[in-house]
Length: 377
Image 1 (spheres, rainbow, N blue to C red):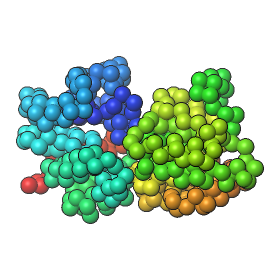
Image 2: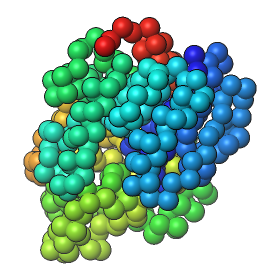
Image 3: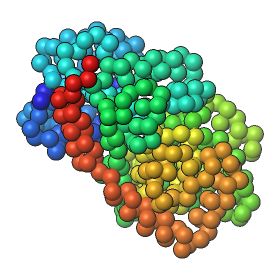
Image 4: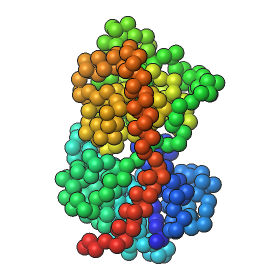
């Protein structure tokens, strides 16, 4: 097969779908030696050396803005596909060209929160992704869902036949593992001004990640006599101002540290330094941060959102996302009970080891093959 992957949506600071796209492309370069790939991406997205092999070509695209990317995808990408004689186009982030691409299409859906939790998003962002998701579903010969939860949501909300949606899960990157390099970790601690002991949350600052409930739970943890601070890692997304006001209003400015987006190497070190990972997200399509935390040996408390319950599979303490009291109680228990911490660490490492990007890559190649052989109108 001649396969094209549109990786132009990856932002400079990767998170979520951007992490998926980059790890998938690098895994495909390692495990698939039979097919030919054309990866369309901004020049800075990939370390070219990791993709240097016969049959794998990085096609650099210069896109100065999000609007430029959208226009390129709709007007120029189909022309490239035709010129290169592509058999399968993989659109890994909801959107795909509306014009005929002259090939089969695989579209990845990471979630359908634009329909399930519309108030989570600014109006224009919500309307764009609702329309893009519907169009992507209509045009896809085969869809990839990152979890069984998302697969069910895509079938229900986008009307795709169940047999045309395949579940291909994500995985922690290879750098997420228990570390013993204390000098490296202390350098990271100093770089970001991290406290000696802390609870960690990782996620873009936006309402759906629900850091507000964690902040509301934190005074209860202080009341338990626990000495940990709270570190929140993630870039500013949208509608995050209320979170900062909440921290100030609760008098927690000295206890809560926002460190922004962390490079993957630094993030792995921060996971290893934390005492507990807490992730009260309202909804996830997969839930990569808690799985990364588990891969580093960090106990996890998370919300009971369906995809998180599916992915974490009994290896974390799960609570109602909006119940600050329950979140505080579970977090205090995980911090105080040494036997529970040991069990969560052991089960988390075991669960995280069941996911790999090699498995993701092989499942994705199988999806390409199925799309090429499909007879969907």
